[in-house]
Image (cartoon, rainbow over all chains, first blue to last red; front, side, top):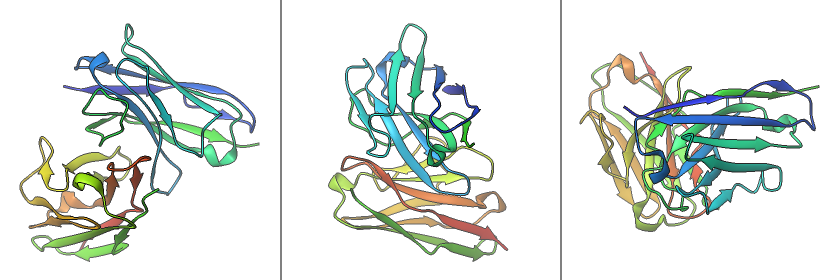
Length: 122
Length: 108
């Protein structure tokens, strides 16, 4: 059974930094692209970033380019999201989501974690 | 970026009825790369349909997807109380991928 477990969410002030982690199990982690999708309170879903199975290809939504960085450590079955210069509109539940393919091209998301909450407020 | 517009915003139906949810794209979606998700309250989204009409593993056959180009539909043939949720469509034919704003399905 595929399982994705996020951690690292917190309450922080505008301009702060945070690193989210997502550990995957139940599948060959390095064979699949991974993504982060966020959901602001009471709002819809927004794709944030994706990384190919080998880690060479990374993509970002325009809203986070230059502030958020995705990476992965396949030896630890973990994908990360480094978040810098955070703003109030980054407040959301951040979901880790598995792609059905290995390439850097984002497809649909066949498994999701339970999410981790990031709150940015002064 | 492709904008997806879902309708109606809210749908209220009784158990056993048929639900029809619409997702319309601002431009044609390549290869019918359109997915549907169900999100129950307090839970993560769950994939129902991909490629416009292929059911994901574990999706009951009450759920069916159809459409092409710019107009897509999710049909739930016989509603059950557990179908109370928000349903989202997602296009992955063009970069960046994008989601619709959701349709809330209420069960009377």
